[in-house]
Length: 246
Ligand code: APR
Image (tube, rainbow, N blue to C red; front, side, top):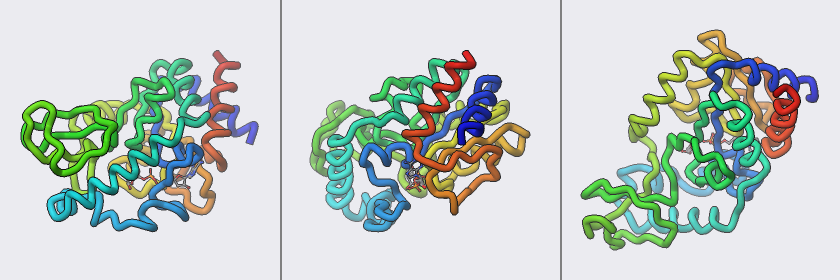
């Protein structure tokens, strides 16, 4: 593992247009359930009843109950060493484009302010009438008025299944994918597109794919470097190696 970590650090150090992509696995050590793990959210809840525009139209109470529960759950947790290492990675690799599928806001909380939240953020709401997006950490119901226009309902500012992703964010990511020479993929099952296609695209352009994951059985990408283990242990080790190279 030591050699693999040294190789990964060397490749990132020399990369000119690297990408960092994280998924729910990077927050697992903070105590936030992943989606498809053994205690994953989708094992206990039905995504089609909770994370689609149709579900919200059908039963906004149920959907807000679930998001309020998740907000409460996340609020009891803290970023872990992997989140802090990602912030250090950006300092050591200023060219690194940081992207997350997570809606927990832990990357920013750990000091990585320049992170593209491609699936939105659970602590923001969006008004269905005036589209105003607002930071909101409190409990929300379908009758909570929009702070801008006073209308209801508000919805979570996250991307639900079947919805398109924020255009501005995706434009930046697709522009980088054209020139990316390396991607570091951390804690994602590689099952949800378009994120699941990023590493494939980098590989197709002869870039290097480095992956950190605890699930050796499920390797969604033809990785060049597969670092089997916890992000909270491996990412800080990569940062230490990069420091030695800088
Ligand atoms: N360190 C590294 N990897 C881990 C760790 C850990 N400590 N714990 C779990 N993992 C890995 C699991 O092996 C799995 O491959 O993280 C991955 C989590 O996968 P998912 O639960 O499928 O989460 P993710 O890939 O982020 O889901 C993608 O699906 O439900 C939607 O919008 C939601 O953004 C989410 C998207």
